[in-house]
Image 1 (cartoon, rainbow, N blue to C red):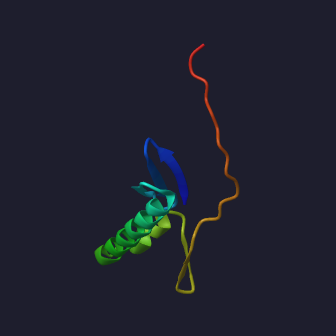
Image 2 (image 1 turned 135 degrees about the horizontal axis):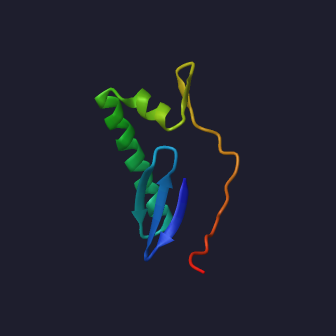
Length: 83
């Protein structure tokens, strides 16, 4: 999960699933994201697409468990535009 501030709100992003939510505090954003991810996964399961969704997000099935993608680095970059 990644959290940042945008204006007066905090944005929480579950990167592998590309699900986002917001709140007035980081804790509220995390709580909202937990609920959003839960509902996202329930919907995928109900639609019969849970395996496809998780595989597309980089998860691997291992003896009935889904293992998330490993992150090897995290960098913040900036770009300069114009001359």
